[in-house]
Amino acid sequence: MAKVAILGFGREGQSLFKFLNNPDVVVLDKKTDRNYLANLSSFDVVYRSPGVPYNLSEIQTAIKNGVKFSSATKLFFERALPVLRRGSGKIIGVTGTKGKGTTSTLIAQILKNSHQKVLLAGNIGISPLEILPKLDKNSLVVLELSSFQLQDLENSPQVAVITEIFPDHLDVHKNIKEYLDAKANICRYQKKSDPVFYFAGNRPAAKIVAQGSGKMIAVSAPDNLTKNHLLAAAVARHLSCSEKIIQSTLKNFNGLKHRLERLGAVKGIEFYNDSASTNPQTTAKAVSSFEKSLVLIAGGKDKNLDYAPLAKAIKASRSVLQVLLFGENKNKIFEAIAGAGVPVRLCRDLEAAVAEAVQKRPEIVLFSPGAASFDMFKDYADRGERFKNIVRSLSI
Image (cartoon, rainbow, N blue to C red; front, side, top):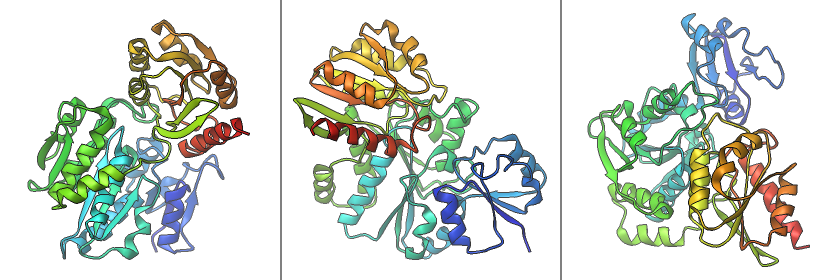
């Protein structure tokens, strides 16, 4: 009998354990054993969770020793593709640095409104294994895919979608090339007739597309605020959705939580929750989208990224009154933006930052961290909910 292990026991690891339904499967997790990587070569098959970097030396050594590595995403493709090929079903994979969650959700919603059988899963918070029982040969599966889920994937979706790409996760990926190579698996194994949608003018996306052999479809999107809408619409048209349903869905879409989410006004100040921004470039775009006076709250766990784009956006903006920084990398961000021409202060925590922002009396308080959340929070959603609770407490 093959010796099987699950490496990492977060959301996907738990989903895998339930799916495999085998009491002999061994769970390896750093929360329960700090030496969890020590004996990987003693297993025949190891299912890696996306939170465990594929480039770890222990994993690469185990691979050289003949251990087969898989994942929930790889297992889903292996099980789903034979079923979908018997009918009209497809996997529509969406990746990118910014906008993949919104684009995935929009595509799924348009398909649903078009009375298609659609299933949405992946990095958006639902393990693809959870939707396998609902799958049939005509299902349209929309998968949001991160670089960590794509890195060792050996199948590509029949429809690939690439949102904006810029450097990210360089605390895990060795360099930008490794990051882009991981993303490229979304189209690397496509057939020539399989479409890959990407933004015209986004050079990193063009580099990714060039690594595949699919049919390249460049989408022009001059407006940052509607880019993801235009990309989703292009994919929906390819899938024969009517223009009326596409436009109606886009018009009624209210956006996702924690992505420039307007929380309303308290004491005459509008609050925006952009906790899903874990990258300086996404925070830079958030800053640039406002014309009213604002205080920016940022900071978190560092990902070895350059904050020059954020400094540039702050300097170019006429709206930013002050920047308040908290979290593990607050000093790094401070050094990067100190010359941007606005006051910058360091705060103890998020509560202290919000309290100081309110004292400034701006028209807007923008919480857009531009960094990961794991220094002080469970994840970006936990961080966003904390911000919401702080804002609610202001009105009491």
